Image 1 (cartoon, rainbow, N blue to C red):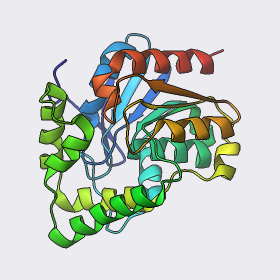
Image 2 (image 1 turned 180 degrees about the vertical axis):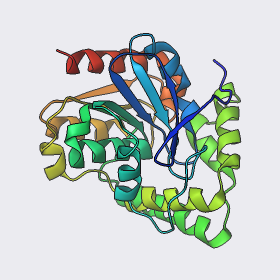
Image 3 (image 1 turned 180 degrees about the horizontal axis):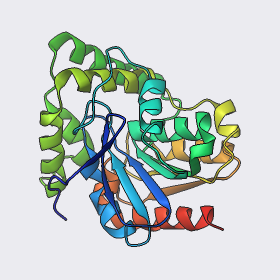
Image 4 (image 1 turned 90 degrees about the vertical axis):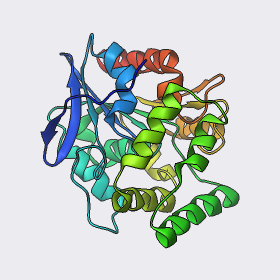
Length: 259
């Protein structure tokens, strides 16, 4: 799998990669990345779906948001680029946005997949992510190596090299805006999860230290139509490194929403 830059379309200041025809599958990436992080999903699932992989505001070719911003502002900007109801899948901060879309804009979401999503961080994890946000604000930039090590350990792979390129290419101010939102949020409330009316997939990696398997299981138990999947051997960049099980579960969710 190569991760080369793809042509883009644009709606409401949000740029996106699109491919295929059929019912809609919307894909939302995490902080510092770009729409190409979903190419393993777009390439396979666009054979049966109309896929749109969005650039977050301030990422890729999307217009940025004023600093500081809120999760709702990120979500609403993505919502404005959705032209028909569909399945929404998000990864990391994108999972926050996908769940917020399903909670606040249910008419747009037929099913939701939250991949490597956080929920009720423990005190140690919450302090670590706040510290990273504070350090970013103080220095004005972020060395991606610590992030890449959390995601890939010491492995030098095409996926790691692609993520390094994306992390170093994003405008610092926009990265900071998104990361501060990510650090301030703690996942959906129990009340909001309990109100999810659509099928909901909560999926993470067995080796994920931050968006842990326990978090996905807990959210799935609260959501009325929730389902948890833990991928053996996967860590944070699961959609890129473990595309086969991710694609299979997304395809199952799509079928579930079309019954």
